Length: 291
Image (cartoon, rainbow, N blue to C red; front, side, top):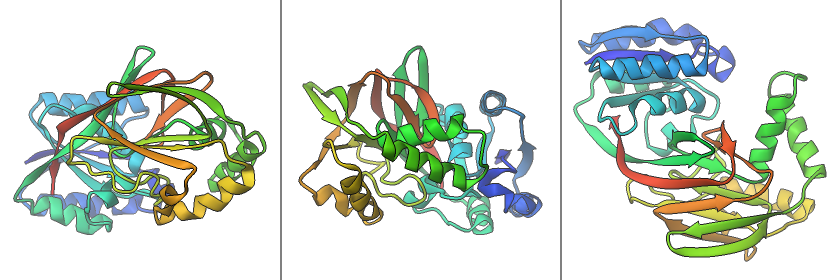
C-alpha cells in the first residue's frame, strides 16, 4: 500500500508521540510506502486526508478517537482502505472494533494486513453540516459536559473535564426532545440521549451496549428525567452496560433517526458537530477497515 499516515502528536497528552518513527518503520517493514501527514487545524487534516484518497492512497490515523474521526471524514464512502493506530486516551472506536490496543502492535497488524473488513458508519446532518462518526453521538448530559469543557480556558488537562461534569450536574435539567425513529415519532423529556454505531465513548463507557457496526442499524439510548443523585448512581453501571436494565432507560434500534431539541448541541466521537435538529443515518459498509 501507499499510506498517508495522519498523525496527531498531541493525542493521549502526547505520551506516545515518540513512537511515531517506530510506527513508520514498522509500516514500511511490511513493504508499504509511508508519508506522515500532519496539519495545524482539523479542517486542514481532513483536506490532506481527502487528497490522499484522491491520489489512490490508503489512510492510517495515528491518535485517539478525535484523530480517527478526522480520518473518517476523508475516507467514508470512498472505498479507500483505512487503518487505526491507537495512540489516544480512550481509543473507543478501535477497541470496540477488536483492533490491537497497543500502538506498535496495531502498526504491525496493518503492515501485515491480508484483508479488509466492511464496517458501518453513521452520517449526521444538520444546520448545513454533514459529518461521519464511528462510535457514539451524544445529545444530552455528556454533550453538555463537552460543550462546557470546550468553553473553559482553565484548568488544563482532565481536571477541566471533571469541573465541567460538576458544573453540569449542578445545572442538570431535562430537555424536551422530538424524535423520529424510522417511521415512528415520539416526544419526551430526557437528560441523556445517545446514538451509537459502536457501544462506547469516553474511554470505556458502554453507553449503547450491544451496538454492532456490521448490522446496518444504530442503537439509541434515552434516559428519563433523573435527579443528580440517580444519574451519578447510574453512571458507574455504564462501564458494564447494565444501566440499560434500569426501567428509566429505554433502548431502540433503527436505520435512520431524526432528533430535535432546543439548546442542545450534538457531539460525535467526542467532537462538536452542530446544534440540533439533526438526522442520523446508518450507512452499511461505509468504511473499508484494514485488519
